[in-house]
Length: 384
Image (cartoon, rainbow, N blue to C red; front, side):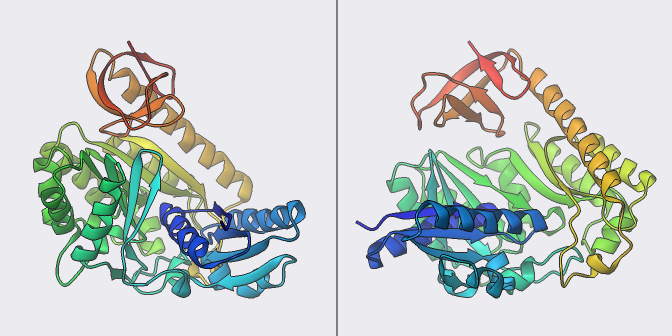
């Protein structure tokens, strides 16, 4: 049997596609292969991918190395010329462009139903690597989701590059979520991954409020809390719209928990502008933060804007991460005494419906059960 090792960098979609590509290679190849699925969001992610290629070749020079992903699509010669690389596969040839892609990770199944992006944020190279936005038809998404439930997955996570732009013959992301829940009564949990709050359709908002199997957790692509920076980023929402979205969703589903992505040190960001981002975290009540120090990417307008000193960028990133840790601690403290339904994962941990991590030593992966929260260790809930 062909051995295929995968190394994925960057977004969840890359991890899903790596598994699907590995399945295809195992069925068709006759040599051992390593697949490196690259990311181009930051210079550091691309550097890590090149470092991985060198390590893989050093460990087993006879192994075939295939490189794909956004960094490989944007700069194929950078990888094709590396020792040990036998093929560079651009994103357009990686998988069927209009299909849904399903993959498993532990007790969860990931279902990629959207790819590409039609927006042109000034910091982002993803549209160059992923192409135009396109969505999988609902029938195909349903078939892949059913394959995951038949494999025993209790939870499915919908993912994509610009997930809230999902549009399959007029069907929105909310319509897709409703269809999955209706057609798969055996599915215990459906989760939405990262979304753009300004694009969330009314059907999705209604489903979050009405469907108990649609999990009360959303990760928002916010990037900044300052309106001028958002405008220079060419984001499509304003600060007040992000706050209003969180308030509205809490009205629909009081138990909902929000995470968010932020870029710190975007060109021209002043201390006052950054302070508005800190304030936004509090005003939106965000619990899980992903903080990215700004990294200028070739081909993007932001790379030509006046840059913030790197030391200032690093310092602001740490301050925002520290605030994120405090917000998480506040959330964890608020769970004490509650009874929560959790889904056990590998490694003695489980996830509550709102994605909060819980320590559950001894629980079998895939088991779903209630816990009584007696405290936390700063990162996860501790149960009786």
